[in-house]
Image 1 (cartoon, one colour):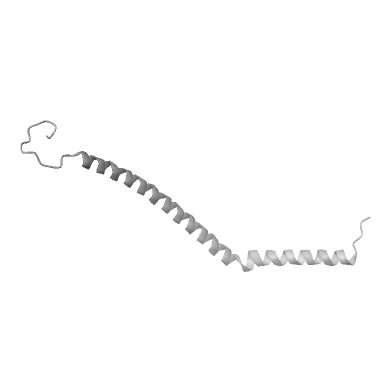
Image 2: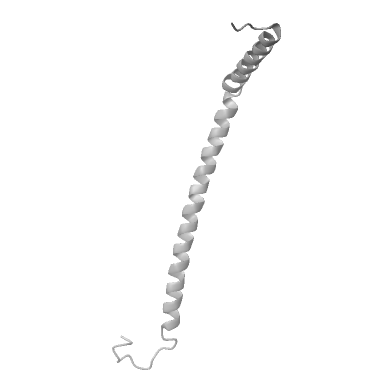
Length: 89
């Protein structure tokens, strides 16, 4: 059969003690820190989403600007003497 020596019992006890202490520190003592970090992560995700939306809006605005600029460049630059042709009207 399997018998435990005193060294194995001591090592197993230390392992259980360390696991218990780590669990206690993580889930009870550091719970406020964990929740604060979770809130910061959520805030960063929202900020990242907003930045992506603003970048998409900027790209749309730039394309509209280029379209308007192109239309402006193709328009007449001087006012004609008479407004009679259908192209001008």
